[in-house]
Image 1: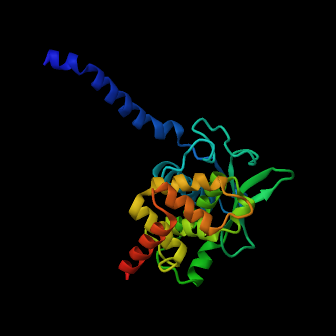
Image 2: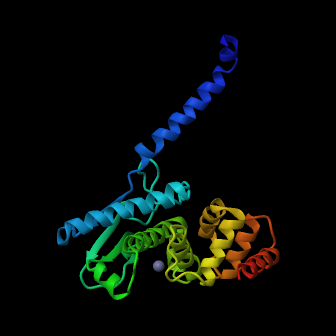
Length: 254
Ligand SMILES: [Zn+2]
């Protein structure tokens, strides 16, 4: 036993080291850079939204792996990776005069932006009007959706163009909603299916990788075709092969 231990001491240390890192990482690093503005309007609701926003951020950044250097919103030591973002903090505004939540990069002059999410104060009322049954799941879905917009903006740092790519940033946001079990408006959406297919056939790491690569899409072209070429190349296929396999997968769904 003694020899065995001596022989394998390095392996033990190695495992212990990773075990320690794996255990320590989330606690020390998971401090999502989010704050609520206008909290005083409804402190209880504000705390709920903040908690869910942090949960959504953790999910995308740490569970789904959108934490690549110089693409993630901030680095593990809170260093700001987004050159255009003013303070590296996502600000959530609770508003009385809006119907549905939305993410926005507020222009602060020059090349500076502030990552913001506007969230309706009377969201409950909206949920009731819309006849939403699972209100908590709906709220979670709303936050994972909007937080994903901020993260994809930061991943690309290409946001003037992003507006033209709803198949990417809306499709991905709705796909994330579906991952937490919410398919209210997403079931047959073509752009959601694209991400579902990539996820199923190639895994989340590919979605993260292509998100990072989209940063380098040509501003003028940045077409769906160019994106498909990037995706196909990442999974080792030609665009034609990729589209054929996607089509086959969709057919099998029905
Ligand atoms: Zn959206």
